[in-house]
Length: 133
Image 1 (cartoon, one colour):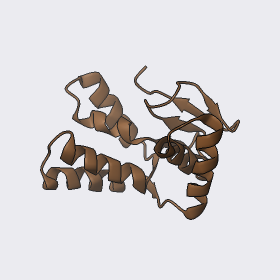
Image 2: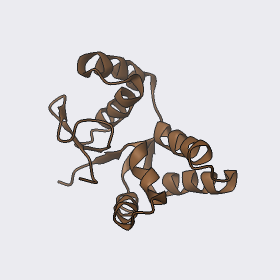
Image 3: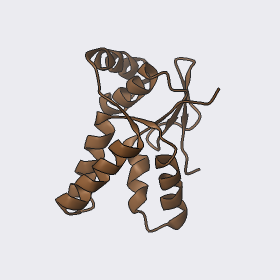
């Protein structure tokens, strides 16, 4: 059985990196048809506009590319409730807990992110991996 992989927003921002190794890794992950949530799309478009100062056209194209190459999960009320639980239990920020909650709800076994502890296991089923280490 192959692992179901959920990807956090920060990983896809490396598509714009000047470091070839990071950019190529991010593109490889994007091409693997991972699972993301609407939160990931929203955060990426926002970061493109505000942090990278890309045009709306380029920012929206990036969002479209994510939605075309990934299985996009629409965040449910249940996932928000689970995020409250995850945030309290593990001490994550609400936004990180919502990413974890979405990964758990989608029965993913791996979460690619740079925002949490590498190799930490959540609820005995989800392993956090920093793909750039």
